[in-house]
Image (tube, rainbow, N blue to C red; front, side, top):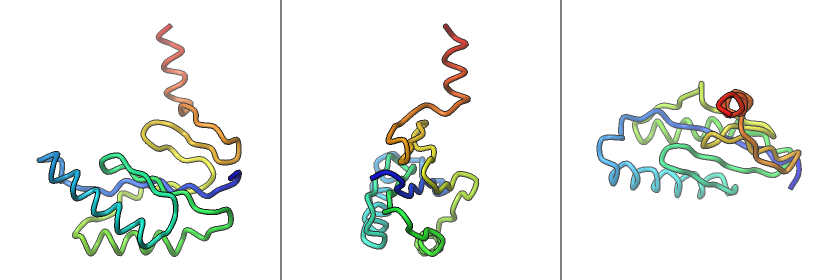
Length: 115
């Protein structure tokens, strides 16, 4: 499992108006991405994380992701897209090389300063 490629992304959406509809929409996106990418996929609301085997070229998969969002009338939030062995997901940093999850440095420093 060490060295797996992590891909975290958040689509931009204005769907936060009704939580039930938003959640159902996110579940539909989850199903589509899980079907297309065949990776280990998880999401919470609009924050998705896909884990691919080491050596996976995510560039083509990223283009597929963008195409799916466009089909649904959404656009990606490239400033939140990440790939590599360390990404930020739900405010944590999973690290597939070290096989650990930690707080990002800015959050860790903030938590230390409040003690």
